Length: 390
Image (tube, rainbow, N blue to C red):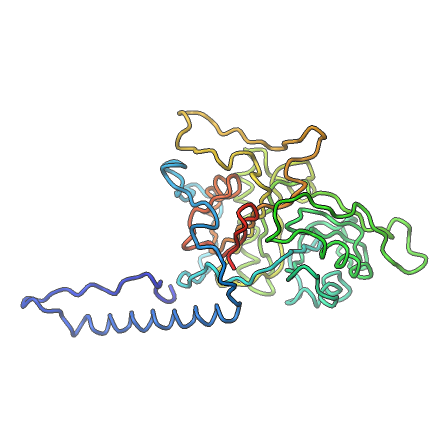
């Protein structure tokens, strides 16, 4: 179980027959508890020093709404009782560390389509890849970039890095096409650096639809422009699958995807890798995000009020009344609602197990709420509130 939580109490002292404490038994227990608590506080202080502390991070219960039986119903905190998948018996994770507030802040997140589910230890070392080019390029001007390889299919369903690929830019929810290592400088300066960040207000995105990229003479005309389009999904679920960093990630990602699919399909929200129908939930495997001892890590990017039910109070629905999802709302000019501002939230969970998936779909994916903040919430942001965990 690891170290004791900081809010744990030392064992109570049981009086002996004479009314005094049994010091021979309780003193060592109390001392051990104090030592564990002191060591944990020291470790947490070191973590805060290492990642930096802006002094403005949101409190655990303020960042995202927490499910409440009075609002969400009596079953809001129940684990799935009929899961079809389970982790291997030897799947061990750290259950003792505090999680919230210990992820380093980032400004933008880039997912590079590779068609793969595993990569070399550091994806910036994938020879000839867009990840390597981004790793060696000048940093974006709008803050720290999180770089992830992903299993998003490449345009020609090839894992050959010499072929042009696509990248998904978050929180912009924008897909950029025809990206090659040679066009990465333009990608960084003209798209990533000018995109909204995790602390940007929810305002219309103003990225170019197409932009010429300086490429060697003789390059096919179809590849001389970087083009953009909105990501069609309402929510993205990102799961680390990088087995080369931790075997548990390679084990957990496909199992969680299967269980998430089981709960999303009846709602008409599941989208496989090649399904680009508007709306729905995309589930992607990505490379290392850190904290593998807290596997499985799950990052959930949501458009603002993704399905139109963020404020629905399930406990107040009439018996048998179903929640009506807005799966693909459009404005008068046929623009997808929410497409123009990108993600409103990123909810980063850890210690996710298959039995958690039903609740995560029902409350986190659909309504932006967290069920087990104390044990599972690592961090994230809410742009509508202007709040972050760092």
